[in-house]
Image (cartoon, rainbow, N blue to C red):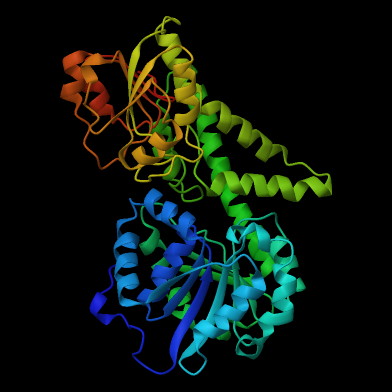
Length: 453
C-alpha cells in the first residue's frame, strides 16, 4: 500500500502537532518512525546516529521505507536526535525539544535492547523519578524487543508509569517492512492495565488496519510471541528432517510439501525444505527461550532438536558438494548465487553462507559470490579474504567455475538455464528454487535438498 506524499502533515500545520518519541536504531524502529509519519504524526527519533546510518545502509533493499524516510526527513515529519549517554539528560532535553505549547506528546516508544549501554542498569529507575513529569504521566509508554519470556512484564511492573504497553514485531517482513506494518497480518498488544488501549490513539489506525489482532496482558503476549516464532522454526527443521528421508527414499520433498499444504490443518507456510533458518528474529527467539528456561532449571528437548537440526542443515549442501566430487574438491572454483538469509533480503545474519564459505575456503576453493542486496555486508565482513570474489551478475565469471551453489534466490527472478547448459555445470540447490521443468532442462547434474532425481 502506498501513501500519497501530498497528504502528509508537516510541522507547523497546527499549534498542537502530535509528536511520537521513539528510541532505537533497528529496522523495526525505523519502519515504525516511517509508518507513524505516514499517518500524520511528527516523530522524534532519539538514536545512535552512526548505528542508524549503518542500519539504513544495510537495509537499502527496503525501497519503500528508504523513499519515505528521505521524504519525511526533508519535510521535518521525522526529526533525528543523537541519544545522550544519560537518561536524565535525555528527559530534560526532551521536555525542551517538545515545547509544550506547540507539541502534544502522543506516545513514547522504546526499543529497549537498542538503548545505550550506559542506560541499561538504571534507566527505569530514573524514568520513574523524572519521566512521570512528561505530560503529567499520561503519555503511553510502549516497549518493544525480544527478551526472555516475562522480561517486559517485569519491567512494566517496575515502572510507576500507568500506561505501559508491549508490542512485538511478529508482523514485520524483510523486503516488505513498510507494507507489513501498515497492513499487518497479526497485531499483538500487551497492556499493563486492562482495557486501556483507548490511550493509544496514535496506533488505532494500525491496529484497526491489521487483518488479525489480539490484546492481552504483557506476559501472555510475550509468551505468544515466542511460541509463534518457535513454531515457525520447528516447521522449518521438521521439513528439513523430512528432506533427508526423502533423499534416501527417492521422493521429491517439494511435491510432498505441496500435498501437505492442501490440508487446511497444516497450511502452506514454512513448509519449504532448504538450508534452514537464519536472520534476526528466529535465532533471537530461540535464545530468548533458552534464557527463560535456564533459571527455571528446565529444558525444551524439542527446541534443542530444532536448533541442532538447523545448524547441521547449514552444512548439508557442502557435504553434498563434497560427496559429488568424491572429496576431490581442493583448489576448485565455485559460483555461489545468493548470500542473504532469505530471498529479497540484504541481511546475512545467521545465513548458511558463512559456514559454507568457511568450509570451501578450508579446501582453498575460490568462491565467486553473487550476493545481490547483501554484497556490501559480505564485503565488509570478509574484506581480507583473498578467495572471495564478489560479482555483479550471477553469470559473471561462470566459465571459471566447476559448480554452482544456489543459496538464496527469489522465485520471481529468472534463472538462465541455457547459460548453465553451455558449461554443463552441476547445480547444488540449497533453496530448492529450481522447478521440475528447469531441472529436466539441465544438461549437467542437479543436487537439491530432498529432491531425488
